[in-house]
Length: 143
Image (tube, rainbow, N blue to C red; front, side, top):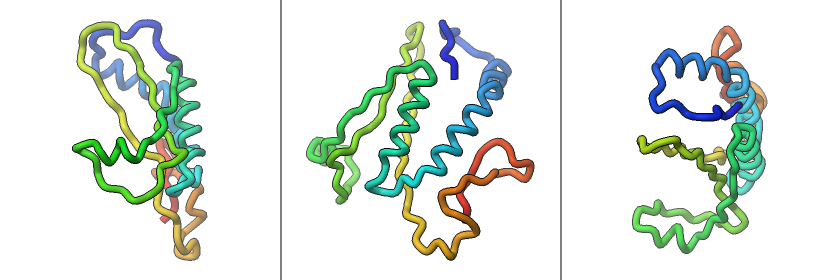
């Protein structure tokens, strides 16, 4: 995804729709790569690397923030967790705005529940499949 040289202060809905449509193939490819990465708890690194590369391809400068279990647990809004976060990191990037407008924060996770009994799946659990009958616009895991 190419980063625009300057960001307009306001984008009309049709302009936004055209910009998203222009990047549909890139977004579909990224989604397929993320769906096909077996990023179960404790094996998130392949997904983090995909996200880091996608941010870099978008013209951003991603960085890794190591996770600190004590600092996370000490935060007043922290959700409880029991798993080890040693060696794990968050991938972050900032896209500086051109003015004093509002900010947008995007947040997600790359870990997924293990597939358990693969014999119960309709196909390989980490194989992307088209989400629509036409075979376009997104991918999902088998069920």
